[in-house]
Image (cartoon, rainbow over all chains, first blue to last red; front, side, top):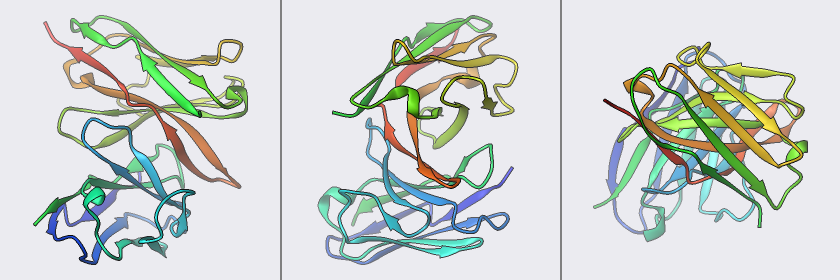
Length: 107
Length: 121
């Protein structure tokens, strides 16, 4: 199975901060990489697909980059509604696997 | 509104069975592959299984293979997960999700809030 490793596991940031979350795959997945946001008690929400494509309706402050094994999710200016847990997920091969999550908390 | 809504969760003893349902609405269910993803209390997301549009092809995580069965009824716009020989480690919120994308660049773009399964004596 392909292992997905996110860093950091958690971070504290202030409104307006630039936030970067990293995801590393245990083998090359080209750009078969998606990012999701999840708030407590809620369904996950697709943010980014194919590593860098913004899902419809997602604010442009979210962006994704990377290919191969190393990927990044960036929030350019953190907003109050962005405090949540973020997951990367590979769809290169089954079983699809997720990173362990990065919890973004208020500083 | 495009949505999926899970039901059927509950408390079950180890070794028991449970059948989850996922009702789809707002889209042509029969055109989409579907998935189940679970989340143990305080833990991350874990992919469980998926099914193709007509139910002829399925795939499972090793942890549930031989115990869980995914199926669908396109006439009822409903996805199912039959869970047998349940273990404590199967305790989780179970989400169903719609697969989207093209040319193998797939993602899960519609998710339900989930239904809670608790395996305990």
